[in-house]
Image (spheres, one colour):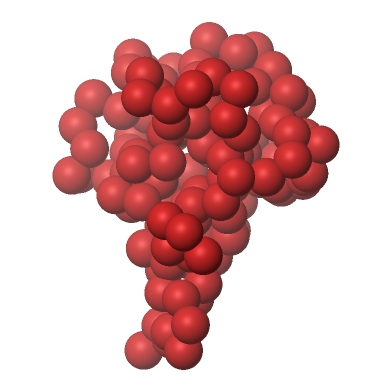
Length: 126
């Protein structure tokens, strides 16, 4: 598929997990991977529940409720968000393009390099 298997444009009404990112510390968030300093991550709602299947607008609202934002596709692909818990490292999650992409484009990205390997044709995590 164009752009590889690590990112996809999908319907906003699909359901995926969420990874929220914050550039300032939030007490309930985990520090991001060491290659991504000054970033904190979470896959939980404000009620501390893991969020694995929500629509795009719900994902944005969950991150907003924390005072955070959706992680960008690049942050996910750079493994910044792996510490976010909730067993989402094998899966695609809602993502933002950051400043580069048109705001109407709704994308999901692999949440980690482990996911990229699992999604690639013939790929394995060995």
